[in-house]
Structures are given as structure tokens and as C-alpha cells.
Image 1 (spheres, helix red, strand yellow):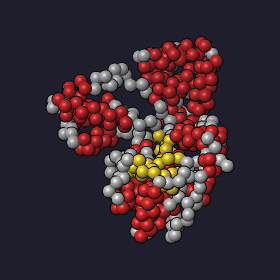
Image 2 (image 1 turned 90 degrees about the vertical axis):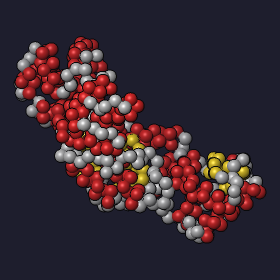
Image 3 (image 1 turned 90 degrees about the horizontal axis):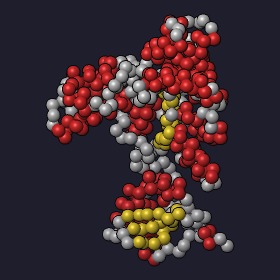
Image 4 (image 1 turned 180 degrees about the vertical axis):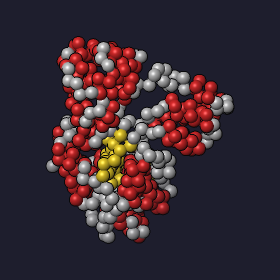
Length: 450
């Protein structure tokens, strides 16, 4: 018989401690916890640590994330030493005797893994550029699974999508700690799926994302595109959760219709609830963000300094806040007055040293390079050379400004599908045509100064 099929016999001290701990939990009616805790077995006492056997790594992580405080508090009630718990994976461990009563219900565990407590609705600045997304996020946090399911938020990099995602998760958990909130990026979901397939742990993977999940939040869902096996698994996960009325919140840098390589059945499901965007913040919004961040940092921020930073960082809220944090940190160390000159000196390495690359500057540079009028790039003329210049300009707008396809299309008086087609065509030419690659490298160098 396989030696790993049984849990090693516990030491008397470990077995005694474990029995007393379970008695305490039963007396306190911690039935929600016994569904998980009661399936572990004591192994031994090592120094100040009670070692418990668990069947696999997933089980260990779940118990540790949700019940370590309860375990160690219970341990402290029955003994002065040991003072902490640890785990040892014992594959195929024999099941323990059934505990009564032990119906498994939702746990009131610690803050869900990966959720950032700093990202809340209180610290999010609502403005015209994000008002609908913020309102929808509030609604989902108040009524998860019922309001806008799924909620799909899209927009450019650094505009606050991830902030809203964390705010939703934090609000749901704070209102009801028994809610099992799972937050991760699509890349992390893909990696966990691949690892589960490789290690033949798919039942655990599905249990985590379907059976043990009340709220699923996936960041940057566009990276699921072209990952056929992962999409298939996510499709079934989505269906299971949605049918059970569990909340699903997704973020992306593009609408579902624009995600390359995304299966049609997922596009359809992503569009079942509400799709809303976050746009680039106005100057006034950027100033408001800086002022709110300054209060959080304990920094007295003069208006002229806020205006200076807001003008320098126009498209990315993350960079905007990062600049203020740097100014605040240097000020706290040097005690130098916060002036425009001081901020300029502190931020000299990150301030734009050239004209901001935007759609207009790209159109001007491309028109100059190919010797065509700027306005011709926005017209319907289909001369081959002009069409190529227009496609290159669209490609560079997508790559260098991170604008959405609809935003870029508006700059060229075109439909967003035309921009998608142009970007894909130029991407392919860059890989297969040396002359086009050389043109693109030269244009990018002119535009970025690199």
C-alpha cells in the first residue's frame, strides 16, 4: 500500500492539543470554520509551533488565509505553548473522524488576498470622466450579483480601473466578511490554470473559482485573448458563477468587441451586464486628484504646484499620483518649501522632456514623413500611399498614446473597426516587411526622442 495514503500518527502532545482546540470550537459554535479546520490532522509540536497535516497546497493556502487568527487564538486558550500553527502537505491523507455539529457555512475570515486596503471609494475622485463607472461600481458593491452582472469597466492605462475594482472588493468584504472575494489579473488566472493542469489539480482550481467564490474580479481581462484553453475554462467558470447569482467584475483596456482572439461566446457574456468606460481626466480633475492625494499624504500642496504637476502628467493618473508621492517624500526629508521650482527639481527625471506624444503630434509627424497633408489622413481618399500613411498613423496612435480604438477612430473620422484593421495590418507588416519596420522605427524615434 502507498505509504502516502495515511496521515503519520500524531505525537501525544499534538493530538491532545488538537482535541482541546476542536472542543473549544464546538463549544463556541464555530461551525463555519469546522467545515475546513476539522479536516486537518495534528502531526507534532515543533518548538513553539503546532504542525497540522493538510491534503494539498490549495487547502493549506485557504485555511491559512481564512483561519490562522482563529486557530492561533484557540491555541492560546488551551495552552501557553505552542503559540502558532504551521502546515505540512500529506498527499492522500486519511480523512479524520466526522465532527458534530459541523455544517459548513460561509466564513468571516481575514481580508481577501491581493485586495489593497488603500483603494477605496473614499479615496477615488469622481468626475465627468469616470462618473458612470464609479456609480456602477458603487451599485455592484451594494448589491453584488444583482446589479450589473457582469460589470465591465474599460479605459486606458493608469486611469483608475484597478482602483475601482479593489474598492468594490473592499466594500463588499467590509459589509459582509463572509463574502468570499477573489481578485486577480487575467495573467494570474492563466498561470494558476496552467499550473493546475500541469500538476493535475483541476478539481482544486475549479473549487476555488466556482464553489468557494462569491465575487470574482478579473483585472486586464483582454489578456485572455488568443488563450483558447484558458478561455474555455473561464467560460465555464463564468457560467457557473452567473447562474448562481455570484458577482463578476471585469476590467480591460478595450471593449469586448475589440479584444483580439476573444471567443464570441465570451464577448457575448461580457456584454450581458453593463459596459462602461473611464476616460482621461480633465485638468480640473487632475488637480482634484492631487489635492485629495496631498491630504492623504499629509502634504500642504499650494495650488500653483498642483497646477504644475497636473499640466505635466495629463494621461495617466497613476503617474500623476506617483509624482506627488515623490514630491511629498523629498519634502518630508529636506523640509524644503513646496514650490513650483522645488517640484520641478524633484521631478526632473520623470517630467516630459519633449512635446507630449498625442494623436495630433503623430499625425503631423507621419504626414511630414510621408509628405502628405495632415488633413488627408482624416479623409476617405484611398490612394495607396495615403492609405499606408493613415494606417501607420493609426498604429502609432494605438502604440504610443494607448488610446482606445474608438478614441483613435474619432481623430481620423473613421469607424473603430477601421482602426482595428489598420493596427493589425501594420503589426503584421512590421514583422514581415523590413522596409516598413525601418519606417516605423524612424517615426517612433522622432516622436519619442529615443
